[in-house]
Amino acid sequence: MERFFCLYSYHYIVGAKHISVHDPMNIRTITGQQNSLYTAYAKTGQPFTMDVMRKIKIKAMTNAGVPLDSATNAVDKAIADLIKSAITPPVKIPWN
Image (cartoon, rainbow, N blue to C red):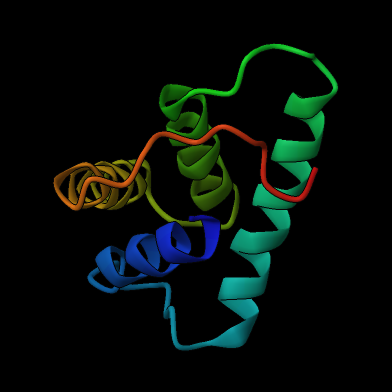
């Protein structure tokens, strides 16, 4: 699911003028941020939910320079598509 979600999220932020999802550096920056944020969250021992995943995705994108409104829009659209496709909520923290 993580790979699927990432691709959808990146698809939706193509409209952000100053970030190109076709540039491997941008994708690596966002992915690196996600990895760090997921690892930090895993250490809390708290349950992993769709809302937690949403917040981490948005934070990773904004940390990488995506404007908050673009990141929020991208993640919300991606989650809506996942739900519409009957993808179940996350049960495991990615990379942990």
